[in-house]
Amino acid sequence: DENGDEMTRSILVTGGAGYVGSHTVAALLQRQQEHQDFDIVVVDDLTNAVREPGQKKPEALRIIEELTKKTIHFYEVDIRDAAGLSRIFESHSIECVIHFAALKAVGESVQKPLEYYQANISGTCTLFDVMRKYGVYKLVYSSSCTVYGEPEYLPLNEGHPTGKGLTSPYGKSKYFCEEIMKDICRSDTKWMIISLRYFNPVGAHRSGRIGEDPAGIPNNLMPFIAQVAVGRLNELQVFGNDYNTVDGTGVRDYIHVEDLAEGHVKAVKLFSQPGFSGFHAVNLGTGTGYSVLQMIAAFEAASGRKIPYKIVARRAGDIAANYADVSLSHRLLGWRATRTLDDMCRDTWRWQSNNPNGFKRS
Ligand code: NAD
Ligand code: WQD
Image: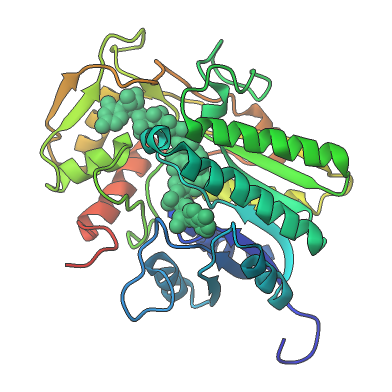
């Protein structure tokens, strides 16, 4: 660094310009005083993040810098580019890595399996190889409840079998990456890996200035509802009302993205706990499931807008219900989701109504 002294210790955040990554960057900079001694370094190739013409940094990071008055180091690099990653490890003293970068559209992954395996698996292996080269062995990984497949019982605890009957390359890529991480932890006890299995992240930063900004028609329920509410889309299609659930529609464990972000901050803190090592998978959810119709009603109440919908056929690959057993996250991370369904809807609506077109201007 410029003083010739020890470089400031840094946290490398891959995919940090995206939805969950940007909220985690905000939480690392804003919430936890004890992490102010870390610089934040983001690597993102902008495949799913917006940068305005003439700007150096993607919108989400530019806005977080404005909100926190702190600097984020940004590199437009693909995680499959080992040389590009190495340059970042040369320029910063990386203490640990939070790895969000991935392609995540379930349906698209069925059409483009190679692209998904290249980004999510090759990219992850390249990252791990560069980490090892620079002696960095601490990793927080973005996994998914999708690794559990069709639930054999509920709530889903971390001991539930994984990898069975997965239907999409996306879901398999998350499962395969977990298996790779288990193997590298077995091969070398220096590794410390926390694989956070997210349930359904929704909501937005309380400022209303950053949030989820899907390109094209949203695949996921909450952004679809929000775009209907704001008038960008006409009507929601509810995928099936003949499931064995409270009202026949699919039930999921929706979790506020700010709670999720704080879970990552807690995970990073675990690395400094004496004796911590190896691979740990941890659910991040609330433990409570809501149906599609309950989500519609909650969003109507929070936004004051009507959400027109019609019931259509089930979506291929969907399960009836899932929700998390959250006891391990509480025991291991000392973390628990605190935000309610109303908070999730209110914060989504603040973001969507302030930014009807997301980060894209016009
Ligand atoms: P996102 O698309 O908003 O963020 C991912 C970011 O990674 C994007 O900014 C994208 O540009 C970047 N990226 C993609 N490929 C890259 C590459 N090869 N090199 C560098 N950067 C690359 O998605 P998100 O919702 O924030 O998801 C973050 C992580 O969490 C992903 O790994 C995803 O699989 C996982 N996850 C998401 C959900 C969810 O519903 N949002 C649920 C479970 C797990
Ligand atoms: C939620 C519910 C739909 C859209 C996906 C991935 C999973 C994880 C989270 C990354 C379901 C219903 C949806 C719509 C609807 N991502 N729905 N109309 O499918 O639980 O999980 O995101 O790891 O891997 O599969 O989330 O938001 O798509 O759906 O009725 O237009 O809403 O059927 O019951 P899902 P979702």
